[in-house]
Length: 314
Image (cartoon, rainbow, N blue to C red):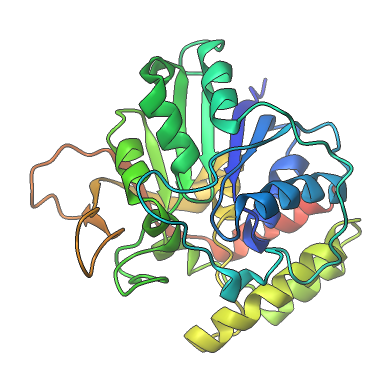
């Protein structure tokens, strides 16, 4: 019997977060979404929480419970990415006021209360934006840690270099202090870094296949991707763009799509040029104990086959 993974999806939508949300909501046999928490990141919090609710509407899941979390990082001013995602965060589709309501409770309080009331090793946290909400929850209530089965996050980089600075990936850069708390929390962590997400490219053929799905979300997902692609196509000179955040959900559904290596990862919080850099001890040169399963390779064709199969269920 398949045991569903109980997840809290923590996100900052963002077109690629939107695809991750759709994939998670489609995977009803494998995943139970306990709740969705929004964090400031790609755009400010008032937009990320709205975008999260809008995606619930689009996926016909107005039963989802959505919370707004932290509106700024733990120790720095907020850095956003409208240059990638557009002013709305979901440029590419029509933005309307969502039907799915916003819950009154703060997202960090929701994470804490949900974990504390759960069985040990039962909750999977899936952050696809800056790690502020997760870092704050751990910082405020360390008793949630035994409840966390694993944390599957999108963030970090080693071989690919940074996408917001020469050395830092955006999610980690926005709140390196929160990332440091998460990486030192002692719970199992899987990191979907740029090293692997840059292998999952939304080529013209792949976007056309999504648009032509027998699915109510095929057209909006394809339109979101097409807007999102334009920045990375110009930056990287590629046919398409890396589809970062859905890698977390694809891993939860079919982990054997990915190859991982157990490594130690630390975050640079104070460097003038390297703030937010993930220092990955890939060859065990420091002797530091591993704290992360680092994804380094993905079956890209298998990823898009899985994505299309599940989106067709909506």
